[in-house]
Amino acid sequence: MLSNKRRSAPFAALGTLLEATHGRGLPLPPTLSRLYGAFRLPVPRSGLLVFSNFVSTLDGVVSLQVKGHSGGGDISGFSGQDRMVMGLLRAAADAVIVGSGTLAADPKHLWTPQAICPELGDDYRRMADAMAKPRAALNVIVSAGGSVNLRLPVFASGKVAAMIITTMRGAKRLRRQRVPDAVDIHAIGRRSGDISAAEILRAVGRAIRGKRVLVEGGPRLLATFYKERLIDEQFLSLAPQLAGREIGDARMGLVMGKTFAPRDPLWGRLTDARQGSRLLFLRYSF
Image (cartoon, rainbow, N blue to C red; front, side, top):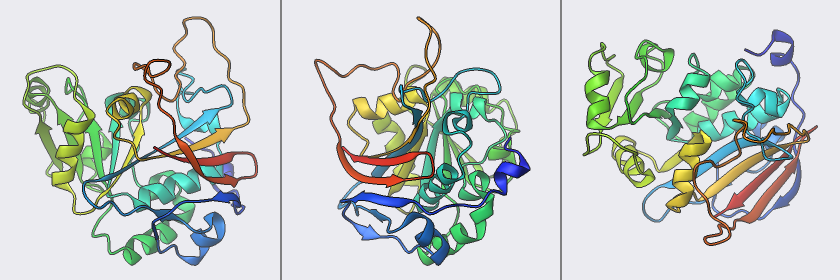
């Protein structure tokens, strides 16, 4: 939970260092346009546009994995500018995908712009209205085992539509609880095991009207999307902090559980760079 002092801090505009993105400009209201600048996303000819957003330390840590300090706030230094960008990306998305580990780390959270940056809530609503979005982004939780509590706000508050993507065994486990009306349990066609990124996107694509999908993690889920070459854009907020690691500790990098280099390196292209008061906001195309 951020302190009131941190939540009330004024926002400074980002400085544009590089802007080489293509696509349609999104209709930002004046305040967001002043704070972020021009914001474009590619228009997919077919399928979905899948983009991700993380904040990282200089040495590549995205989660300290310490109770009470496992979220992005400890990585970003509780940056208001980082929350502003997170809210902007959520406002642009038609669905936000997170894994059950991310939900467990922040069980009271809703994956909406207003939940991460309430100070700009009205601006995000105006942006959604200008985009003719009928509702907040679908909140998608991926849990192969179905071990999630359906009384959590993302499911029970009624403020967002939610989908849980799971296995048949996980769905059976979930249905032992009372399933709220706003929750869709989607079981893929196997009893147990890992769920592929392609299977996740097929389910999400059938559930939403738009084509923009934001993946917020965690690192293991993101690694699956990268392994299947299903991430189009990576937004990365770089904090000038060294977190450090002990040999064998649980601190996480941007992707975990999959390897790429040297046999299967995955290179991106820097398309956008903006300077914040402390953080550097980078964007890569894959």
